[in-house]
Length: 273
Image (tube, rainbow, N blue to C red; front, side):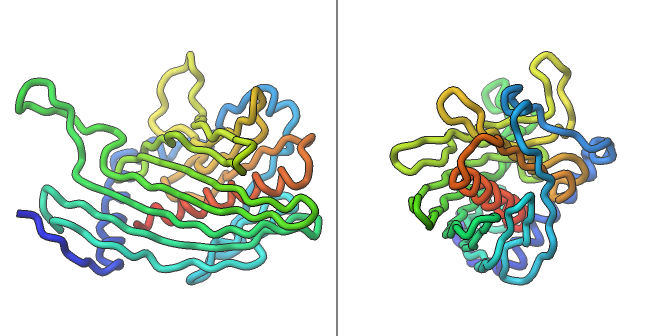
């Protein structure tokens, strides 16, 4: 009978990192490939500012110091992950963690955006495909882990507003495959849908480790995109790229830049939980 076990965060993180390392070894040829780029909407590609993302520093209990274009994190706080494991070290192991973080982001204008985020992680036994009663083969590529990011984004200034970011991700334990489901950014009136995008063309062949990112859609327009993985091992921070339409108003650009920064931090958190 599985028992609930309160497991130290360091042990859970070590177990998670071992799984990630095993995934890296399996996909080593793909990691050695050249940097890749997501395929963004043609309209966005023609009218976007393309902003490479740098990580100036990573400090304990702080959000990573992401910088791109005129946008920078000016203050932050990263809480410790808290959670528990059921059936630890058994075939029925189930792990749940929660981590909170806050930060303030600023562009060239005096206005800022304040973020309060909660990220919940859940992982369980790998799901296998049942081909006959009691007979299973392979492993579901997206089984094993999922995380839900919910963040409040408060914009100050003349266009003060509060937005809610929701990003629901399902991935395999090694982080080599993942998909976002039913994700969005909304203020209760406007709604910006977040969709998966990769370096795989619809008519092209399947790539072992494609570049991955998200497009942000409002109405019939793609207004922004984020590439959060562009080559190397799954936790690599190289070749991170932001695409922002250059005809958006400053508050919307700040909103999108802030939401994408929260998503980038959530990817770091996910590798440690």
